[in-house]
Amino acid sequence: MSTAAHLAGPATVEHTPEPVPLSLATVANRYVSLGATPTARRIRGAGVSGFQRRYGDLAGWRTASVAERRQVRTEVASFVGHTVIACAFPVDVEFAVASGCRWGKYLRDAYPGQADRFHAQAASLGFCAKEIERMWSWLAKICIVTGTSPDQLGPQEYHEARTAVHDAVIASRGYRPKTLSTPLFGLDAVMFHRGQAPAPDIRRRWTGRPVHEVVWDQLAQAAPVMVATMRRYLRQCAISLRPSSVALFDTTLRQFSASLITADPPVTRVADIGRGHVEAYKQQLADRPGYRGKPLSKTTLGMRMGHLHTFFTRILEWDYDDVPARVPVYRSDRPRLDEPLPRFLDDAQAAAFMTATRNLPDPLDRLMVTTLARTGMRRGELLGLTVDAIVQIGTGYWLRTPVGKLHTDRYIPLHPQLKDLLDAWIAGRPDWQATDLLLTERGRPIPPTRVDKAVHKAATAAGIGHVHPHQLRHTLATQAINRGMSLEAIAALLGHRDLSMTMVYARIADRTVADEYFAVTSKVESLYAASQPAVLPPDAAGPAMRALRAEATKRLLGNGYCARPIELDCRYETICESCTMFFTTIEHRPTLQAQRDDADLKGQTGRRDIYDALLQRLDDAP
Image (cartoon, rainbow, N blue to C red; front, side, top):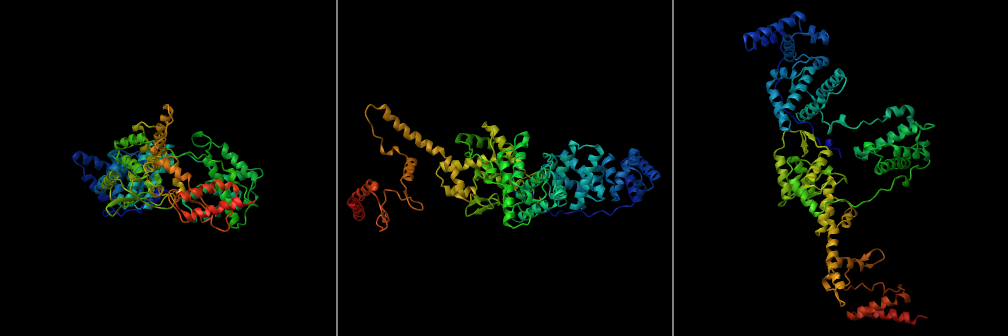
């Protein structure tokens, strides 16, 4: 699920009353009088005089070009900076970026209380003083472009001015400075929690891999009918599926459409799509480089083919007008994937890993890794936890997971050590934030890669190589089943909808089998060493082996099997043999004789008589 979707609406923050904009004359008098010494007042007065001689007023100043406004003496530039803020005079974004004025200082001088509150809020989110100063400097540029104070910025106003400042910096330099993204990335988070900005992106979108793909509007120009059919299908999917799933379908259909339009001859309708077009697209996927230049994985190839198969199947079922004669995608188009057993940490590795986790210096790393290891949660469930996830049921504490992969939630019992870590984290969490997410870093939702790095730190410190967060889930399940927890309890713990999902851990519960194996083989070895034949003691078959024997002696029935231990009697044991429609043949005589003898040994006369009659019937048969 998308983590940013958990962000709540912006919090309401208290704003200081907006000062009434001052006149130019009042600003000039106040500016000069604030000089600390006679020399400072004389320099400030010279700045005011120089401004009035050159421009007259702020309107005249604005009519000058950016280059002309930059070519002024320092005292004039200082007066201009104080004046545009005090008069709430909006400044064109080109000058705000290129002037070189100390806008952050001028804004602090005008609104010291607002500056102190902003610094305190940013510091509570984890930003250092240097980072906060850089963010304040960018906020000052945004304020002078809008002609407002920091507390009076609205979300839409902030977003538009922030975008304008960002684009103006890039345009003025001809490239994206490395120092540009970090302060704006942090400023977006602080302003969101102050209730003055839209929800921030979870990642720096400009750092992702570039995707050069055609958009629907371009495709519609070449194939309007086909695009209309596909977009209609996507709109229906968006009603019932998650946005992330619809986004994957959208990408597949756009890629497929682009290959169809460039085919020879071009395809402009879904009805004209044939088997050859699917095979050509499949070959394009196979030849296309994947992540880091490697071939596209079987999983991705199968996913794309699955999307197309579903698309064609559904539009035929939904009776669309633009449909092919039959579904041109077959099940065999999807590569058969390997089904390896889940990877888990053995007991020694798990112990070393947990020791390293307890020694992680970062509290967030320690909390995330411990939560994964102690609860078996999925990574997405961890990132979706909210501050009210801890609940008390009776005398115990439980952790409620968010609705996740299988569209279900559940309660997980909290280990005391994990409960202490969660309490400490919540106690140190700023309560003025505008999100109910439990795990945030510097005011933003944590990306999945942040969890991966925390697990990697613990694994590296433990010296056990690469460990993925999902391996901790497999490890907890394997440890539980090896120590006697029932499959039903494990399924409830892990949030499995079907018990067949849990059965995979029964395949990897090799510790119990290994213990039983070596316990038995040590006794068997004594047979080989002895000169005389020996008989194994009755306890040679341990509990697991006895369980395997019980499984092998289950009585098969028509629609299942009877799990009654063979040592226990059952009144229905001969219900089939006593039926008038029951028939048997001579090859079953040894089994019937053994059943007859067993009944006689147990004193079950009624059961013995039934088998006697069956045996007599076989003997009398010609």
